[in-house]
Length: 350
Image (cartoon, rainbow, N blue to C red; front, side):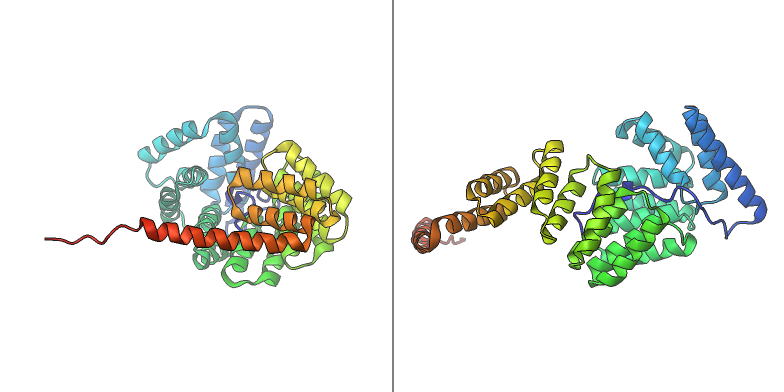
């Protein structure tokens, strides 16, 4: 499931926040601050909007949308390096600033600074254990590090604080699939996430891919078609949709999706694989060989070399298969003799 889109930047639920843990007075203050922040953001008054969103989170740390708004403003107004410097200044002044530590963790994660990201999330949670967004972000880092059981615990803790957090349901689904192979429960979690955030193409893409892995191809096509409509320039979504189309015998549609993906990113290897597979299935071996060769050249992955050899042998018949195996056997013997000849004598001490 690691191929899934970079998980800590997918959208989260944009409304319907449940303030069950807050008093009615705090609930009213949090909602007023959040609505004020949205109004200021729409008016282009971003510095004031940031202050309003920070106020929202200080009142209600479990809020499902305020962190997302903050990330969007920082991303649009600053480079990652500038934002990191800004936030590091904030935590230097106030060490218990759980909002800044969480945002820093996200940025460290984007730069693959895993240990720093986890430490930042630990500081955030030490200051505010109810920060559901921090728990989710920490969970996605743990998924990236393949610490799946720890990720499961992080997502479950987030859902205790904020049961309507779509990213937490998606993360738990992903971790359960990776940790335990629980595809059915993973599918259910993603269905819940999509119900909470139905216009999120990243969630729909992941839902489609899980359905694909479960061989529920019509469901995969339905989810991926919607994801493609919402995000038509995403080569991952277009490629996944192409692969799903292949499974329901829509090869023309599949080929069109692979070419759409390659128009956005000509070096998207999985799309090249899809093109090669379509041509190979049709017996159009020159096209298949070209796609596999390009995929191998770009990625250095010998799987594509194997696919190229397989397609080449299929295009030249059984006699070619026998000749190729004989050639590889002779080459292997020669390589082994050469290796033995180059072996250095053992050294002795003293």
